[in-house]
Image (cartoon, rainbow, N blue to C red; front, side, top):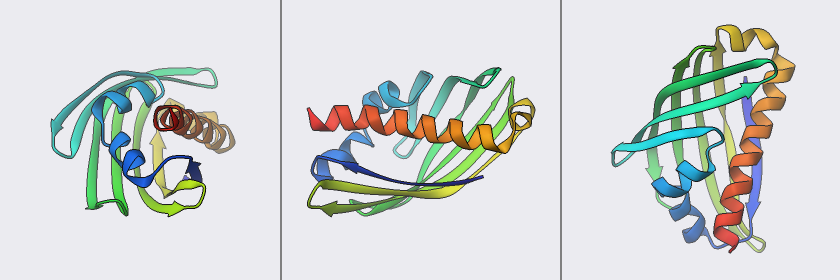
Length: 145
């Protein structure tokens, strides 16, 4: 499944970058996050509870931050396993200072297997967009205040 979105946050690039690397902010903004623990400079262990359509699942896994080019871009690799199956995603976030604030381009792929994959591509696509919008909506609130 392709993941593509562009988000504009009305805040300066440094503040947005710092927020996206702040453990407490991530814990508060990742939808369904039950725990997020930094395991090294660029990795976290995570437990998330998510409901997609009629499928509710608790997932445990990891988030790795790779290929970091400060204030420009990084790649996030997310892997999780739970009662609904497995999720693996690799997305690149690219940052640009624009007159409105900070533009974030998100591009990548996700692979889902198990029960959650059976709910259908259309529902998964809509659910992933909703979760991404919830995450960036929360980040937006944090950096614009």
